[in-house]
Each structure stands twice: as C-alpha cells, then as structure tokens.
Length: 193
Image (cartoon, rainbow, N blue to C red; front, side, top):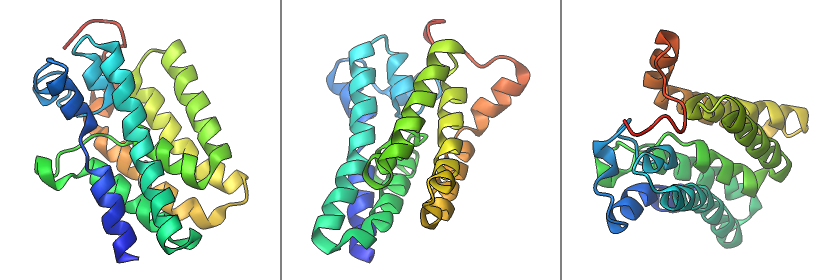
C-alpha cells in the first residue's frame, strides 16, 4: 500500500507544464496567469501544442502510475496509487508543494479505474470548454461528475475517494471561484493574463 502511494506520488509530482514551458522557451509558467503548472496556464504562454501535451501527460501520469502499481501489487492497490498521483500533482515536493489543479490528473485516474466514468468526464469537460469557454468551470464540473459517475455505475467503493479528489480540485480552484463570483474569471481565447 505505501509503495503504491509512493509510486503514485512520484509519477504525479512530475511538473510537466513547468518542464514543457521551460524547454519550449516559454519561461516559468508559474510567473503568468494563475501561477499554476497545468495546461490552462501553459495555454496562456501562447502555445496550444505545449498546452495539449501538458494536458495529455498530466492525465497519463496518473494512468501509468495506477496500471504499474496494479501490475506490481494487484488490482486492489490501484486506488492507493491514484491517491498518490493526485496528491503528487497537487502538492509536489519539488515545487514547495505548489502544483496544478488536478483536472487532467483526475481524468487519468478514471481512465485506469473507471473507463466509462472517464468518457463522461472528458465529454462534459470538452462540452463546457467549447460552450462557455471558462476552463475553471469546465474542470470543476468534470471533477464533480467523477464521484457521481461512480455511484451511477454501481462502483460505490470508489465514491469516497473520488469525492475527496473532487473536493481537492474545488479547493485548488478557490481563487477561480472568487473570480467567478466577482464576474471577472477570464474565458479561453481572451488573451494572456
């Protein structure tokens, strides 16, 4: 169990957004926008390609951690690796425990543990991004869908863990929530912060 958590944390704490922006010549992504290391903030550098790659890698690092842990220690160990990956992404030790917001990483968890929930999560996230164009709203709504999908799919065993993950995602979006309440949350495509 502890090995799986540690493995998940190690995978989850890789700051792909920070690394890709730096190696792509975009500087320190923490110095712009929200200061987050996730795909939305990488998009604010003006590079759609780096943002897309950040999203994919932040997602797949959780999937990889879970699948590897399950291969090494059994299927029942997957949730422990998932917890490690989420905490690693949100609070990476290498960055003073200041990481991303967890939306893509939570999708990666679902891909490994509940593929049908992952499909709904991705569809909801993309649909809201395309219609309202507010990344934070799309991400938070998708995160909230995760525990609900587990309940609907009869996978109640995952409900508490996914509810905890969704609450962490909401907590990491608290500044976005304040901006939404004030009516000043930026939309995708409105320009760099």
